[in-house]
Image 1 (cartoon, helix red, strand yellow):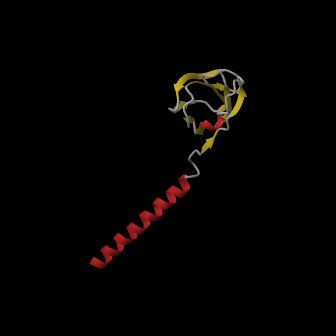
Image 2 (tube, rainbow, N blue to C red):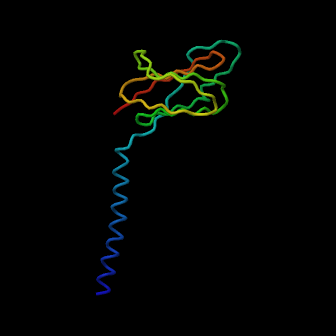
Image 3 (cartoon, rainbow, N blue to C red):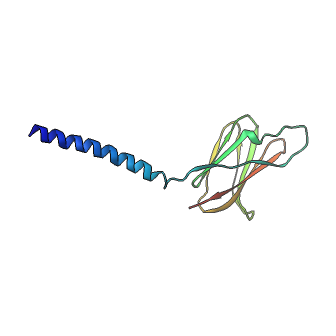
Length: 129
């Protein structure tokens, strides 16, 4: 009787591990992957400022746009708009803090960053349901 009990417990232990592995492997296909949003300089004031596009790191993860600033760029205005130009959200943030913007609808979007010195950077991304 004790051997049967041990065998059943061992079988449960092995099967639970197998089910956990299968669940995590299958689940990865359903999760939305993080995708970086490439940033380009749209407009420069020409005041001898260097390109700061590498200091702005936006990542789209499902319906959330997360932005990390790698250096202090001062006050930055951020606008998220539909590709047709209709603004979804405008906000201002002090760097090097980051921000997150929830975008409820699928579609093509443009994020624009206006630095305190007048330089404008932008990136295009797509939100998929």
